[in-house]
Length: 337
Ligand code: CP
Ligand code: NVA
Image (cartoon, rainbow, N blue to C red):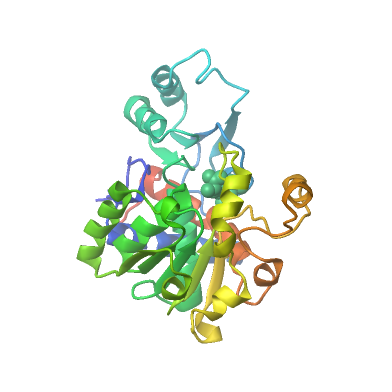
């Protein structure tokens, strides 16, 4: 009966629009339960492994608190804590973890590692970000969008920045599945690959979403309800100078927001975080010193404006990850979606 039971969540493309919408709505429901102080121990007695090859604030915290709220035990296994990748293959690690844990979160570099873990562990594996996709971010993002607009389908979302990173890929494909018009605005060298574009087009043909990949700011911003950006240099990369040169014209600032032409109450700004909007960080100080820049992908003015929804989005990581774990592991009665 439950179409989610036992399934891994590795990439959005493996889910239908109805399934993704169900998880978003379930996240909203669990958020209401949490706010009302109503317990929801759907994973009582389960053990959850949290495997992190890259660092994390939100994803780690969201999985940890979500697991505890569901009555499960989360165990953090960081890059330097276990043998994975150094002394032991992903496949062998998968077999061991699968014999002890009921579910595994994986954040790392290679999507193929997430796939091997899912194939060889025998338990649900949840992708907490790879170089290619960030599916749990999408559940929180579209939950935030639904909270703000009361709907998802038919809205227009513009992602401005590195069109080849995990978040850009995920927004393009998830938006296409859900019937959201997605614009990717970036220099040509950072356009999503043909493979990703073709995948998104296939879904868009079904949902009616209109997709636009452009290096033209005016065209890309026009009519947008959601302006989204992400760091210019993702984890695992180090090409600051090159990215600044490529992406400086694509900074989300007030002038860029104006280009949407969207009424103020129909426009929001989103960012998966962490964000480079001031010099309050070590990187911030270094970039300021080396390149004279104190803001990168988004100005502090936009970040702190009434349009910003980044912290609601961050909170929703927990509620939506909870929904995903409960749906795939909780033996819940979920009527056909
Ligand atoms: N948005 C996000 O995934 O944040 P973390 O890297 O802090 O987990
Ligand atoms: N694109 C970013 C997302 C961080 C949540 C990265 O991979 O570092």
